[in-house]
Image (cartoon, rainbow, N blue to C red; front, top):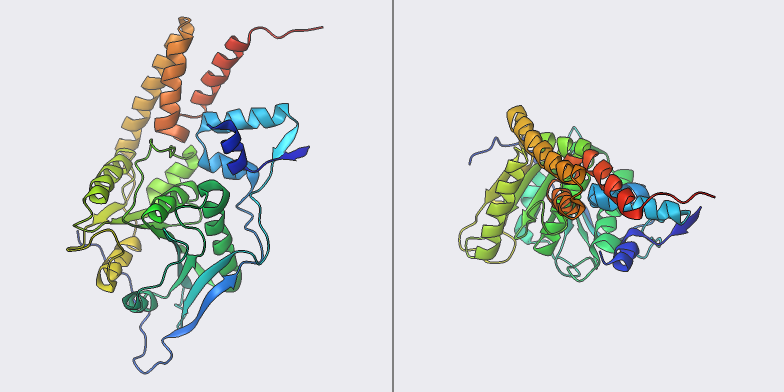
Length: 359
């Protein structure tokens, strides 16, 4: 099969409050230097296997959109190519604590809103106390393409660090500021088997809107059970405080039980100081709360009811109404409505196409 353009190009073409504290590593007061090394502009030399065309689209698109893409590629006898990667062209800023925790380093990959992010001086101690490697992406600000660049760079950076340091798989997190925080939430939901936490400064996404449907069901189950989401927006940053509250409530309505917000006093649209960072890190790495089976059963019954209404419209020949209901279900519930949503979409599409022509 011939490869097709990457997912970003396809989309353009288609236009379509006290938490348990975690144990500190314990830095000897006489230890110098404070960090093992800080490397600005570390070059990424190899792509992450997670940036694979088919799987990449499955985790980022709604089920019906992903199925539409898959069928289009099959009709063209093409594959979806991985997002492009040039060895040595992409760089990250890397900071590694001097002492490796017994279980391995933790990792935070930070997505800035601008081309670069200067690590605040008072963040260093909380990171070192918890044995957290800190990676900040370069040239991945809000003006960069989300699917074609920003998300792939997060995954490439993860591979770079994982190949060089012993990591605790339970302490790998994604973070960001403003637009980078919203990107971090997308990554945490799409790859909950990689990232156990999302630390979001002044930015969040309401799931079911802004092209962020719940991911495939097995990934959403994992996100619900073990991903911790901590949203931090300043008391003066009213727009993001309100959005964080809506985003938290929406995630909790989807039975995600490990979502918290922090509101630092006298902080506008910026990252907090080291004291608030320490509090946020403690919540990010606290044990995950138990899943709420009753919530999940109620939610699935609601989704099944909406799917039944769409199917009833289709059975009655009300295809326009059925299609409108189905697209709303796909946007809002995403992978939680699949595979039934995809099967109904294929049925409606086949009826619109008419009977197959045979020789």
